[in-house]
Length: 398
Image (cartoon, rainbow, N blue to C red; front, side, top):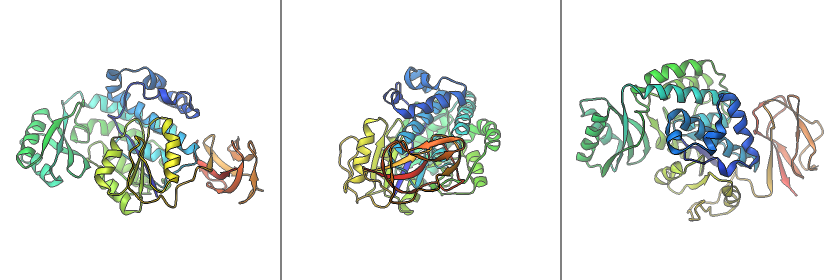
């Protein structure tokens, strides 16, 4: 089974949107700009490293990039039954699964970035990566220090991030090395994320979360806070409210997906950090990254192959992908809008669909097939509310 993972803050880089600017999925950038009241295209094309490093810019730019890539992947007819995102990436996961409307998610990400931008100004905070020491050892090192320092990210076995006051983080890093850590490296970040230092941001963001419509996600979405999959919208609201001040249990989330039967992990976003963390956490998993259009054909080929190759050309040992993969002849017709889906009444499995044929309506918007093929089945049911770019019909191209 396939799980999509979504990049968090820190993966952004100047010009990361340029490879996608001529792709049809770029239309989401205009939608995001309207929802955010900001020029998102500027962030993705023209902003330099210093501008992108600002939390308010990094989060919006990274989220929209992930959504553009998701849209491009779904246009190929590739979908996932599992989703997880690292910190900010959780908003991408919830949007991809249908729990959040795209416009609502943009607004939340804007509010999240602005709230955290303010929170990092006082008190001063920093973060450090501790390598080569188990979770308990890092937790004990933090507890042994007289000062504000906590575990912020459980990224992989033997890779834990701590955060808090600069002096306390430095002291905890030294304490961790005394306990056997290979090294403790200060990170170039602007604040102590996922600690009590983010309480002012959490309080501000909670108002926006509480005012946002949250639906039950489709498929499996694993939460950062407890590394557990949830369906109840009320539970997700509470988890989103807690996330800013709680550690990201990332490798535990990957283990939860692994235990649920997911074998293929595809990172969608501007970076490939999560792909590396999968390698360290889930032995034998198939790992792929999509962050440029060149990776789309490679993704199709990889999912159809018995042995998957990573996008850098290095082979990955793993079993053949079964169940949810789609071969290169299979395509999905996706929704062109958000609204209630009404299919045509006279289309059934095995029938041949011509390019441009009317398949139904989403609200008042007509849904046409962009290619010819054999109709294999519906992926959305009559009167279901769907989001833009949600797959609604499965065709086998001829």
